[in-house]
Image (cartoon, rainbow, N blue to C red; front, side):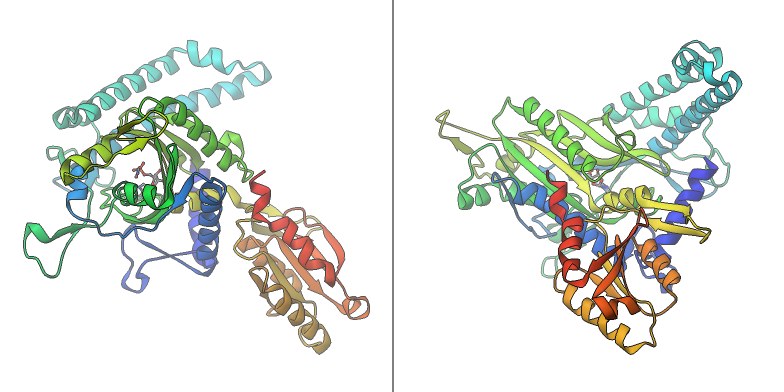
Length: 513
Ligand code: GAP
């Protein structure tokens, strides 16, 4: 556990030191749960978005994209259920005046029980060595069985209370488990009450409730209200999808874990419109397709898993998360939701306008059902960074290095051009010539600000998959050294071949096969 939190601290420090992520308004001591992306961060983020957009929109002739506004008519959020149901259960500690999510306090208590179980298992593993039968131990050891039973009882109570929105029961669970404020240790809690997560603001020309606007808490509604516009203008036939990437805002009570839970973040969402009754088939299809998208990046399958929702959101009849093993445990990275006709049906009712599709094969009108895939760009960024950051020894006694083993297609900089001697004019000129040629094809960097060893370390730290070194031999035969980031292998390459070799190895197309 201690090791994992060190890993996370290193990751956060690395993101700042190398220009990936900064705290927002840092000169004013920052704004909680809001972050800015630095020069390398924005490149990585754009590459993630590009991978998603190309996989969804470019590769599917039945998925089209839009870019809807953040502000929407206030009735949108009434119809979508967000005004009435987009709440988190909030509890205050009367002594510390700190505010918590009641369900998160209970989940943290469950994590402590889980940690006790894992501790028992690890102790036994050490004691029994090779003959250790973990499954048998978990199902027969009295202490583990007792902890597991406690865990399951709390899980069931929490799930039931959340499904029913039973705030008194949540308060009772906190009391029964004797949960104290993690900061002050006080158990002096208020009642639990609902807290709406939407940020609101006011239109300039209308006073009072009528002019109240919300910052969208999900991008999906911009897709739903445009369903007919898009379907008619693109002449798409069901089944078809609409995709969008954009900012979303949530007034999160618990804002921790760096960019995992932010108040301003970005989503990549796709609504797939289908015939009523076909939701099971498409739900399974998109579950599989989205898992494949993650695995194509080389992420180990042991770090990704499906997790069915215990508590369904107000709009869903089935929902599953793709969880990733972040440094602080397995957590939601993406959601796949069967949203039925909830959204389109409610917009139809509240707007009084018909939002239906005429199915030429069935010869009938209906409100389409929807299966949605929804992933946070920032969470995907955090997953990729935590998956990639490695501290390792460099063979040959050259010390340690921090290296970001990002997939080359996602790497912020594809190639660095490094002159071996910065005061040898012919070498510098040749290196700058290569840079000026390659910059039209990829994001490349020229750097002559240190020794070659230092320059390599810097490029490793930002995840650059290739470094090109120009030396005296280059002047004679027009060859350069091409160094690969992960294997550290070096090959001698003619400068005319450089572009083709790098292009092939950083091409996003390799992710699509
Ligand atoms: N339209 C469905 C929807 O918004 P969600 O599960 O609430 O569903 C989808 O959010 C994804 O958005 C999550 O899986 C996560 O990746 C991302 N996300 C949600 N809240 C976030 C937050 N506060 N900070 C960063 N990412 C968030």
